[in-house]
Image 1 (cartoon, rainbow, N blue to C red):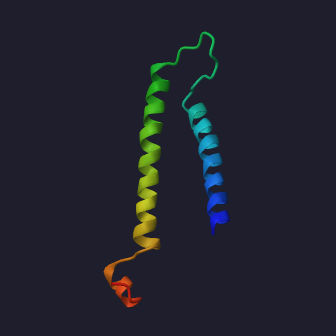
Image 2 (tube, rainbow, N blue to C red; image 1 turned 45 degrees about the vertical axis):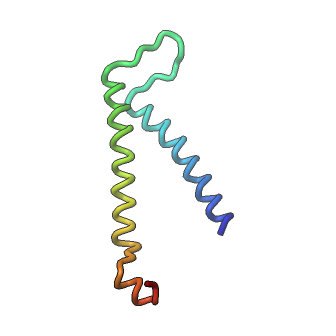
Image 3 (spheres, rainbow, N blue to C red; image 1 turned 30 degrees about the vertical axis):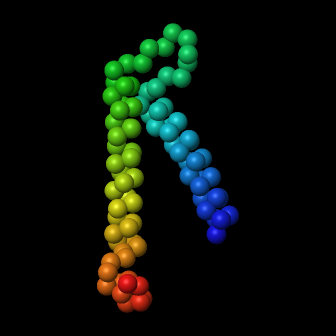
Length: 82
């Protein structure tokens, strides 16, 4: 169980790093450190990305917990859990 958890955690870290870089590129972020000034559109895109992605992830987690893994009182009682 530990090895599966560790492997999935590493996959998540890799996806977060690569996905974040792809999203930053999609909003037009320039990575050069010499003479680059980010536009207001880039700042707005980064803000949207930083608020929209976690909101979508929270909705996805809610949907999974509500529909794919519903543990209500009735279901727990059916398995003998008080």
